[in-house]
Image 1: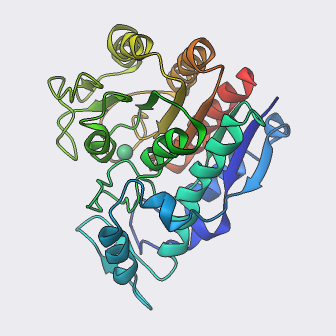
Image 2 (image 1 turned 45 degrees about the vertical axis):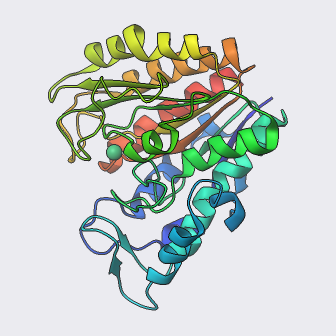
Image 3 (image 1 turned 90 degrees about the vertical axis):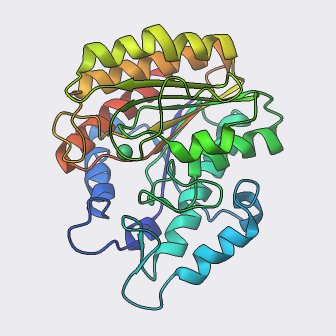
Amino acid sequence: MTTLLLTHPACLEHDTGFGHPERADRLRAIDDALSSDTFKNLKREEAPRAELSQIERLHPKAYVDMVHAEIPKQHHNWLDPDTVVSPGSWEAALHAAGSIIRAVDEVATGRVTNAFCAVRPPGHHAEPSRAMGFCLFNNVAIGAIHARAVHGAKRVAVVDFDVHHGNGTQAAFWTDKDLFYGSSHQMPLFPGTGARDETGVGNIWNAPLAPGDGGDKFRAAYEERILPGLDAFAPDFLLVSAGFDAHLRDPLAQLRLLEPDFAWVTEKLVEAAAKHTGGKLVSTLEGGYDLDALAASTAAHVQGLMGAS
Ligand SMILES: [Zn+2]
């Protein structure tokens, strides 16, 4: 049994322009970090494209058509003040969503234990009908719905440790008691959602943290709120929105996590998967904008996944 690593060169061709934090060098830094001997046992595959029908389980066709129509023939186009697309963005977005689909297929059928998708654009801010926060399609939510539609999962959980609240995933899951969303994030911070009293139909578990909070507060949020909620939900498939922008060095936020905190939360999620899902866990990259912190934190996360496989 093994851990699968999915990525695709098309994800480097989503060009966000000079000075944008969500840039192709993020994936190059991760690729470098995962090239060391420590990771030689990873099973590596190129992510296929998602079918539009798989994306349209979450996003209305009119929205998908709008994103396609907004892709420029050259230069850039802005879907909102943060979310920029270039000629390569469509293929990147299809492969990013496709990586989650393939990862769910491989994990659900038991060909691998778990998987990490090193892809961009990220997804957790994309609402069913709205691109925002660097995100076009909500990769992790598309994966959750795919696990249910194709693999018979009845109760699917997403845990999100990106420093920003995943408003898109929350919006997608809001009225569905068989989809769980648990998130730790800084508040106040973009996108402004994620208060504790946003609970959906009892399936949304937000654990906001204050600027300056470090690993102790982060771990307490999991021990006291998110992990008990996840335990009570008892998922049969677990997905993770793995953003590494809660790191001390990250330029976009003010939490103070270090690599051991990402290793710790990975270990806890792996334990939860072992208990509830037979180990089935698919993790996907969201944010993380300091290249060195991103590379080292991703390496700690993937090592944690490999430790379980
Ligand atoms: Zn983020």
